[in-house]
Structures are given as structure tokens and as C-alpha cells.
Image (cartoon, rainbow over all chains, first blue to last red; front, side):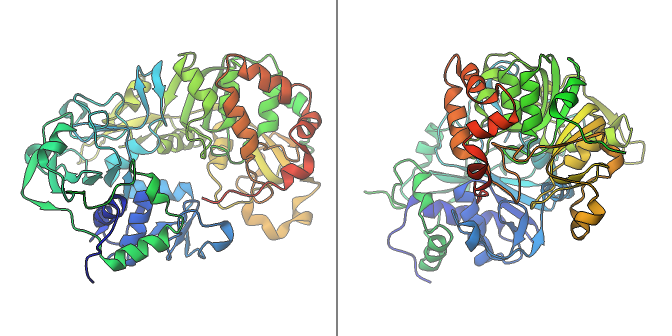
Length: 264
Length: 292
């Protein structure tokens, strides 16, 4: 399949994000938010047919549910996955979620809870939700639509919802029970596989320089050697993405919905 | 044996300072008729335990909540419950934020009459700063692992909305997900159930749906028939949440006197008046179930 000539940055990011589930095995794959959800569907329909997806409510489906699909057009369920079973799945480690934290730090700790003081927050966000349990039990990946120092903070995140590699927070010794997959942003793909779990840029999106990523990040980054260019989507991927997101909700995720190839 | 009672009588037995667990999940299957009766009462200083939606937001707005034990508080299509947000940013409630799954374990422990259940969940996170009294425990086996001892979350009373119930306390709950209603019922000293449809004997009226029974009748102390009593939250498979109503409620959270306005417009009076002011029986029973 040939590389598409025209694609958006969102579509490039979806294809990069789908890679999180390559080789994941028969696990529950949950992409939270529009882009991660399309990415999980794309992974299942291309190279990872074994992963399990939900309809976003309480059922497992073999055909990914398109974004915004009305109740009447939902695929038939293949299994039952109420929240009680989601937690069992989390605790068993057989799950890999992709989430969008509000803050993330150099230790891979992530915050969706609140900004500021714990008991009188400046801004109340979602609360820690399932992040503490997810992050200590199974692999997690992240999608960040606006790579900036506000998200990738200089110090520690305000509230540690997802646990990370910060050494002062663990009662036991190493290795820390933390498993980060990939972090896909609007600029690059990162992981935490540098020395001592240091954050690392694995690939740059077309036209992005490492210095630009570093300037938008509140902590030092390592450039992987070699550092790749994030692959462009092919026509098959684009047509699956369109099928999974017929109303083009992906166009509203990255500010300005820029093209995948930057204008020279 | 007849457990049927009224909202007023049931709420009349509650006391200030109690720990009250509320079933349902976000904007789904909340016992809102009971919540509104609490809003009309002079109860205060409550500890509220929930996967919260507008139940928690309204109780916070009305100043009923001293301490809040929660997995989240959300309206889903409005991700952060607006009056919960307002109360938190004002620093007016003691927040005991939990991982969603930790609350499951706390309720399980209470139901099993255990002091705690061991888990890895919460270790390394700020759940431990939200709950400074939580302690660790070491595995007595060869692994010696350090685990969080999630303490039992004991409830004085649980409030749960069901689809059908009988006067003996048998209940049935439709919908794709039972959530954690059964754990709330089991963790509580007393459980007050509201229902869309009250029948004399479930075995005669709905024996074909017996697998929708989430917890046994011995856990149920009171049953109240409250048709549409989950509004403005969803009650599968009868009606969806009322998005327009909840948007109006969320808009009011921006105003200093927003809660007073909401209370005066909708809550004051009784449930019959509430249904009329919330655009009536036909409107509510026609509300579509949400698509995800």
C-alpha cells in the first residue's frame, strides 16, 4: 500500500498511536478520547485483530464502534464487560489503555485530578479516576494533542494520579511496577526507555526538529539513536480511519487541524 | 412483611453526620427522588460515598456534605460535575478522592466485615495524600510484598434506584451494567430502595427477569415507588439522562445564587410537583438513552 499524498496531523498521530498495541496480545485495549479510540480500532482492523475493544458502555465488540454511531447502528456484542469486570481486567494486568493526561512529568507521572492544592484546588479536573490502578497494574500509553510545557511540566505534576518512576514514592525497592508504552503528541513519539527510565524522543513527526520538541518540554529529553521520522499513513489506513470516524471528529482534536506534512 | 414506605418517612429516619452511600454511576441510575428529599430536609454534615453525578453535586451545593468519598463526580457529557467543581474550588468539603477500583475494594471489605482488603492500587499515587490515614501492610508470605490496606468503607445507609421491586424487598435492575449497587447495599447497615415499578410479589410479576436481581431482599430495609425518580439521570431501559435539564443546571453553577435558583425552580415542594416542573411524565419517559 502506498503512502498517502495528503493526510492530516491527526491522522498521522492516529497511525502512530495504533502502534501502541502492536504485539500486545489478547488484552483489553481502551483508547480514551476520540484519537486513541480511533487508533485502537485501526490497530484491531490492521495488525492486531486479537485485541479486545468495548463499545464504550458495557460490551465487548469485534467490530470497532465508529465515533458518534447512533445506538441503532452499534455492532452486536461479543462479550460483556461491565465496570466490575473492567477492574478485574485492570488488576489482572491484561489491559493497555491510552489516555490523555493534563500534566505529565519526567518520571512519567500523570495528572488528571486537579491543579493546585489538594483540598482547595485552583482548578478541579476529573479526579484521579482509574489512573492509580491502571498505572500500577498494566501498560499505559498517552496521547497529548498540544505538546507544551504546560502539559510536560518542569517539576512534579500537581497531583500524582498515574504513578511513575519517581523514587521517593515507592515503599519497596526497584524495579518500579510501572510500564509506559508510547507517548504520542502533535510533535513526536516518545517513550521512557532512556537510561533509568529517562524520557526519550523515538520519532519526530515530518518537519519537526528535536530542538522544537525540547523547547516545548519542561524537562530534558534524550534523542533516540537513531531517531526516526514518524511514518506517514497509507491509503488503507486513511480509509479505515474515515470509516471509524465518519463525522471527522478527529479534525477537532489538534488545534487548527494542521496537515501531516508541514508547509516548507 | 411489607417494606413499602414514603420518601418523607425514609429520609425522616436519617440523621445528620451519617455516612450515606449512593448507588448508580455518574449520570446513570441515581436515586434522585431520595436525594431531593434530603435536599428538602435539614440534614447536614453528611459523609457521602459515591461514583458521583448530580446527586453529589446537588448535595454539595446545598451544603449537606462534610466529607466526600468518591471515585469520580461527573455528568459524562459534562466531564466535571459543575457544583462539585464549585464546592471543591471553594475548599468547602473534605475530599477523600479514591481510585475508582479502590472504592470497590473498600465496599467489598465492608460487606465482608473485614477491616481492609490488600491491593497495589493507590501505592505511589496521591490517593495517599487525599487519604492520609491509609496504611500499608506486608504480605506474610514469601514474597513479602508491601501492599495498601484499603480500609472498609462502611455505610450507615445506602440509597439505590431500581427498575422493579416488590414489598418484600426483592428488586430487579435493567440496563447494560449493574455498576456497584450490590456492593453499596452490602456495605450498609440499612438500604433504602426506590423503584420505577412496585409490585406485590416479584415471583408472580416478573419471574422471567430474575437474573436482573442484583442483591437479596434481606439487605433491603425500605422500598419506595418513585416513577421517574432517577431524573435527571438515566434509568435503563426506561429513559435517558435529561441533557437539556443538566445543561441548565450546569449553567446555573456559574451564578452566585445558582443553586438557590435551581432549588426554587425544581426541588422545593414534592416529587409530583418536580415531575411537572421538569416538563412532565411524557417528556421524561421519552428521553432517549445515551449513545456513547
